[in-house]
Length: 180
Image 1 (cartoon, rainbow, N blue to C red):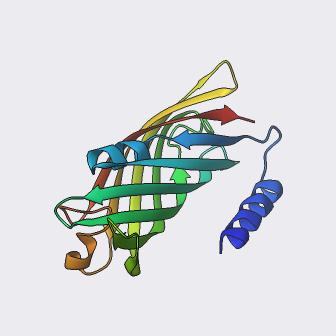
Image 2 (image 1 turned 90 degrees about the vertical axis):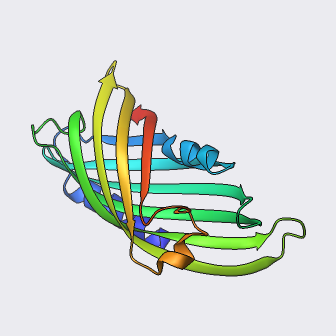
């Protein structure tokens, strides 16, 4: 699946690239804040390719590992997201951006002491994403964002994944990266 998405990303970027193709690769710190707020840690990556001056595609991947005392388990979440982003001012990768997409969270729950896997399941979700991209010195990206993940699964099961207390996840994050 990952290979297919990477090949699709490169193919679409090559076919629809503009005169001056623009792409972004960034470290996604939103997963770090999600991990810290849930008694753990996290990290992530983000890739974005401009298709037109008003539209781009974005691939995101995050890993969050938490030790949830209320559940008594170690919970690992591997999140994959595909977004279609819209720039209302036709500025390409710069300025405000609204995105909508689909993703899934592969949740792996294991015993805190022995490390033995108790269960593993997928949570599908709809992703809504609002951001503002600042491009500094034509090469560096700073992108604060707010994101809502709306899970499409059983709420009781979600309480062990990244959505511990609610039926949605609100992530406030920051992307730091390079434009090429």
